[in-house]
Length: 134
Image (cartoon, rainbow, N blue to C red):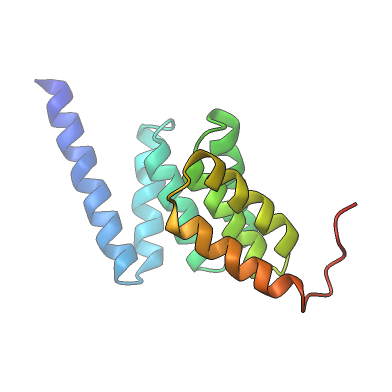
């Protein structure tokens, strides 16, 4: 019974944080996600959502660290790989973005987000001053 109470409380906090994020109250959402991670540090969904909130705050270095840590814990965490693609794309690192999105597509061929991100990145490759990878 205690476990279901804990789960219910966790679900409620996730819902609250998600509501704040959807209203673009990123400071409040960040605070709630960080609070959740203090009590349950291995909560990958909350960690990913924290990374997303940091991304929307344009705190790309912090968001990248969250995504990289999630991938260290689980190399198949495609949402974290998508996050790294998005970060690379907004930073103008289009070849890196294509690589991240392609890894997502290998695992989840129907990922519309990854296909979109990769397409946008390919579009920008032609006009980018970014050196091609060697």
